[in-house]
Amino acid sequence: MPILTLSPLVSYATTWDSAYIESFAKKFLEDEIAPPEDGKIFFDIADIDPRIIIKPCQIPLTANIPENTDRRNVNVKISCEDATPWQMYLPAKIERTFAVVIATSTIAKGATLTKDNIAIEYIANNRIRGERLTDINAVLGSKAEKRIGENYPITRRNVCLVCKGDTITIIAKSKNFMIKTKGVALSSGNLYEQISVENSSSGRIIKPKISGVNQVTINL
Image (tube, rainbow, N blue to C red; front, side, top):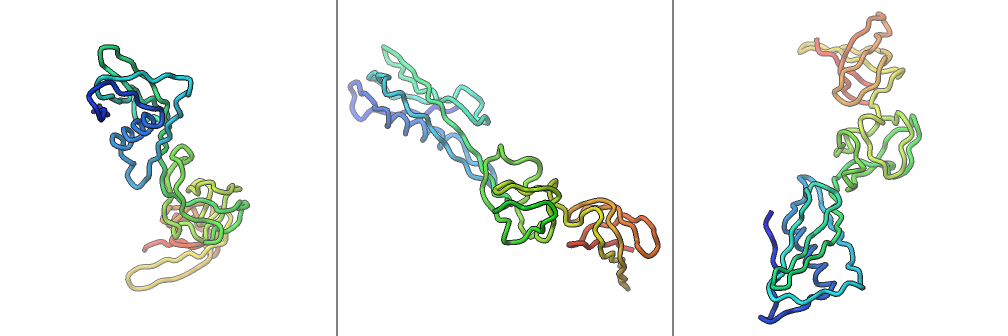
């Protein structure tokens, strides 16, 4: 990994204070670790113990990270490699966040998702389980399959655009005609997913794709 150096402003030995070294470590992280695609990144450097005496250094300081930078917690190694070398490790937390649909208030099981109870927010990657949903319109009108806590990410696992047991509209269409009838959902799903549906008129079990809230479509 490339090493960042911090040059003294004068040629003789220089003593760096804690705040300067902490800033140096943070800048090293910002220069070396890019934010994730479609996301943001934040660095939190631990404060240097005020009891630690920072010795002078005759040459520029260097910084590197011994660990895998994909980790959430790393140690930034600050080194002086002059005639009397020294080094210190600064713990740092790396937080990667992504824009996802979240609940802005607690949503009860069976409640409908609307613009009043969901929004797009950046949240930490470790709080996201499964596929990230980034489009509010993709889940508007769906129902919570279980209670969703405030600020909790919305996933395909906890909502359904069509839920098992719902009475739904079945649209059968071709290039020349379209007919509508009623049915009962035998499984749950979200937009464009295929589910099992019982046609209320014929009793037949079909597997159309979800095309809207309580609506499925089958192409003839």
